[in-house]
Length: 212
Image 1 (cartoon, rainbow, N blue to C red):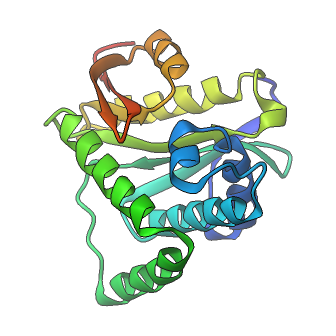
Image 2 (cartoon, helix red, strand yellow):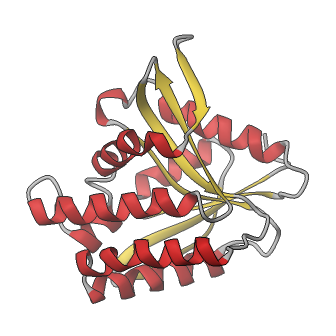
């Protein structure tokens, strides 16, 4: 990766960079297509995707999650959200804000999509190892920067973080794209389980700390 790139932790002020990047990065993601429709062709689907991505970003600052990204100068090229292994605790103010952020999402996303999301989270979390671990929630690279080593840099940064965390035994992730399985396997992830949710294939993977 070019020395002009830097990996930095995102702050709340980076939301205007995060939302359009992840909305575009996940435009062809099988789960997003299943949940929201084709955001490249449908304006309403585009609004639903943006609302969901926006919520995920806000949620990360309330729960025990971090958002990291690769920047070229001030341009965000790729980013990920990771849940750390320590239990999260919301105070009353944080819980109220989370509820307030959920309300508009309910009006953007259908009940069917919300039920599918709940099923997805339940199935994928139950497939993860019982060991204390990080969980990779989202990772994406802007289409113009794909193939330039940005995704590799993000994954390597994540793995380095996990390996230096004494409380973590590894990192789990889920993908609906079978091509991604081989990509993650090259980084040391193993396929834990393969399932389906509403005919959508889901591949649950784990990278234990002792694999380099």
